[in-house]
Image (tube, rainbow, N blue to C red; front, side, top):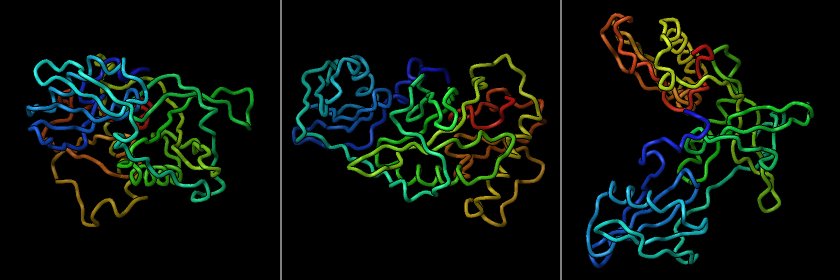
Length: 291
């Protein structure tokens, strides 16, 4: 992932549709998230059923010109042209996510105010590259990855992720926790995300000429086993990797910190594994600093 992920991501990575509502006239209404602009709105298509892919391709043509307060648009069912838009709060179906108060987290954990973060780039959906100057080191400009959430579906995931990452002991191949990100809402300091140190270098999909060494795979397996040892409920007690098989572990920020993992078994000599199987998923600067 580069400094601006959304400039080259696939359409279905920038947009997601969460709910579908039939309309009385035979059309439908979809609730869409635009993770690039961090906004959500309903997309109406009247008189005819259309596929999800048609809706996403259509809104991509005009979404950058929509005002930030748009809550509903209507598109043509034939060519996907924008017919109308609305910013009427009565049509706003988005839910405001819950942000826990700062007092729900240990007092010893470092914090940074959201207003002190400067956005440098976008690394993915709800993941930014940012900088700030720590109060304890006024002359330092610290480069960090800022993880946050703007939808209610990620409240529980983000809670577990932040708590796991801040409490996990240091490991040479896991980027360390940096700080909780705090903002004042209604007079109460609330945690709206967290930061980790940023380790530059890109990922394997951006560096296809770089040789993927077996020791990198061993580091990934070690990292997964290490994280699982601190979150025992994430894996059955009798779980074992099948014998005589090599397990390729795909680790993303969320998967690593919550010990959720994906295993793909290949009965191959490690040197025969296609390079594409070694691509890290998710935010690349979390696992294997050497990769």
